[in-house]
Image (tube, rainbow, N blue to C red):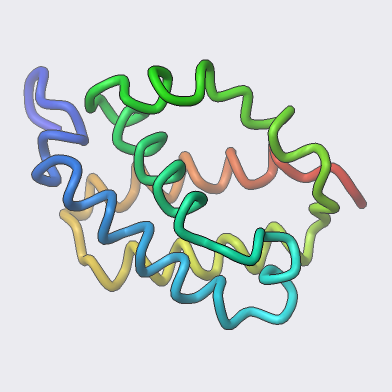
Length: 125
């Protein structure tokens, strides 16, 4: 991103992250491996992820205001996340990024972050 432009600003703000998360969760909703890990109602999870990502990439601190510090590893610990679940999660997130077709530098930064974050959430072999 040029200068001090945040990724949040480069993609046009919150609407990008809502669209990204909506596409991601459309994939999760039909995934036989991942769907059982999520609550019956996906809307709260959609909202939380969109707020978190917007904040992480330089947007307003709404996630912290609503949920407190992210503590991602702790929040995901109750769920069995092994290599298969990690890879399925990444598959849907990568597809969501591709569908939105952000600039190449944005896509690269997001892929790098999600690869690291997905592996950090893994708590099973």
